[in-house]
Amino acid sequence: AQTVTQSQPEMSVQEAETVTLSCTYDTSESNYYLFWYKQPPSRQMILVIRQEAYKQQNATENRFSVNFQKAAKSFSLKISDSQLGDTAMYFCAFIPSGAGSYQLTFGKGTKLSVIP
Amino acid sequence: EAQVTQNPRYLITVTGKKLTVTCSQNMNHEYMSWYRQDPGLGLRQIYYSMNVEVTDKGDVPEGYKVSRKEKRNFPLILESPSPNQTSLYFCASSLVTGQEKLFFGSGTQLSVL
Image (cartoon, rainbow over all chains, first blue to last red; front, side):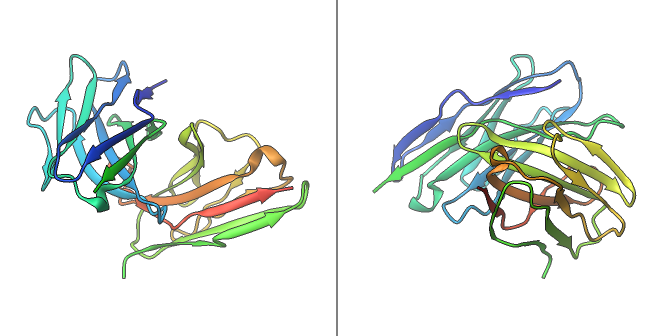
């Protein structure tokens, strides 16, 4: 079974600053997908970024980027130029890429507060 | 508009009274899934479905049933709800396998008294 660990239950950052959210995972799979989802106070779940494990290049989406370290099983999310709208719960998630296993595992989440 | 529609948004019920939470998607997605969200526990997968009549258990299936009779619908059934099933529930869908972007419904806050 896969596990996903987010070691920071809560974090805060000043507006316009940079913050990094950590995520580690445990798996015996060699190929898989990793995700970061954002849940603002509206409780809607929004995909922030998706990474394919076989791709060495770190995924980026505007101010959001990841640091994917496959050997260390680490998948941290960096938010640059933090904005008030980034205040949300952030969830890291994992799913194997092999056929026959489509169970998605989420971490417990990190609550991020952006301070004006 | 591409969306996952989940109903109701809020539900209060009593122990033992059967209920169904509906989920429907209009994107012709093959993969659909249910999650429960509890404070400090994140999201945990209850069941998922790869296509019509194909379902499988997630991490926390006990006390829940699902069915996938049509591609667009994936209802969650609680035959005999108990207070420990009080939670925020999400339905989600993706194109094929769940390895693509998940589209989430707006959630159902369930309270079982």
